[in-house]
Amino acid sequence: MYTDKQEYSFSTCWNIKRQTTGSSMIQEIKSLGFRRVELNYNVTAELLRTIEPMIERGEIGISSVHNTFPHVVDPDYGTDSVLLGFDDEPRRKRAIELLLRSAEYAHRYGAQAVVVHPGEVPFEYNVDEELKKIYHDQGKDSPAYQALWQEMLEKREAGSAHYLKRIQQSLEEVCEISEQRGYGVNFGIETRSRCYQMPTLQEAAILIDNLKGAPLGLWYDIGHGMMMDRMGLYDNVREANALIDNVVGVHIHETVGLSDHWCPYVHSNDMTFFDSFLDIIEHSPVKVYELKSACTPEDIDASHELITNRIAQRQAARFSE
Image (cartoon, rainbow, N blue to C red; front, side, top):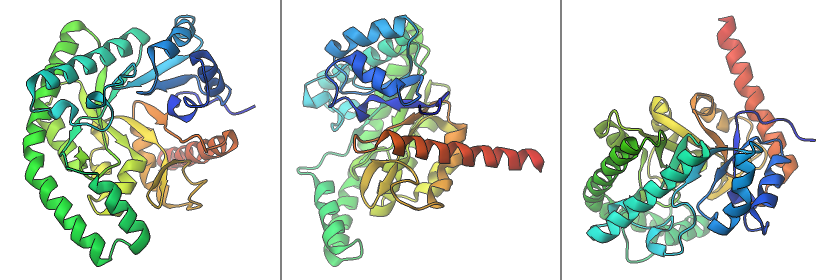
């Protein structure tokens, strides 16, 4: 029997490829001690047919849904796309409609937030994949990595202001319509796992500042932030903790090298570094484990115990001061 995870939630990305029905997927997550789940972007309308009755009966709570939700086959609206930054107006409007559809589902299920991939600076090829291969084979300090990194950075910086403006315009429309419809959910713009994707933490800060008063904040994906820091895109620990008051949700996982979605502490065997993110986890209104299928129930339980015990120790230390 695994410990009751209380307010912590768990993403369906862990077992969605292993289970054939929505109800069996949710039951397996419940068996880990979770009362709440995040429905990720691969959840189909078919899977929802057996999940929705469980929600209605109060057998499971929904913390968040991940745009685009339910699953959309069209790659233009998948997780790795320009999405809210499309210059093509019909496609941008379609991206807005799909995000509002995700928000409607979140509202219907009593979720607090929608996880949003805002967009990217488009490249002709997957430069991130090439960079990660060089990083792995030759190292970050190698001439090959440094040369391609500078090339990527120059193109990214040349396009970021334009796409950030388009994303901001789209988010303004989404937030306004969502509030008019009374959805009452937060939109969390998520830190990403590819270097050309948006937002960086600095870009997220700009969007949040420019849309003050809107139901918008940072969805901080810890593992993705660690990955981007290692590749050289931003100072993850410092910049993330500076945005702690703007965090509306967090994806909890750890990156080992440049491989993400591992259980914190357990898979890295580093018993100190992940402490840098405990304040953000404690402070976050929505706390979601987003783990890969290779993580065993025992790993998940051990990692959760380490995280919650360390947060409790910090709370006790503050109380005794």
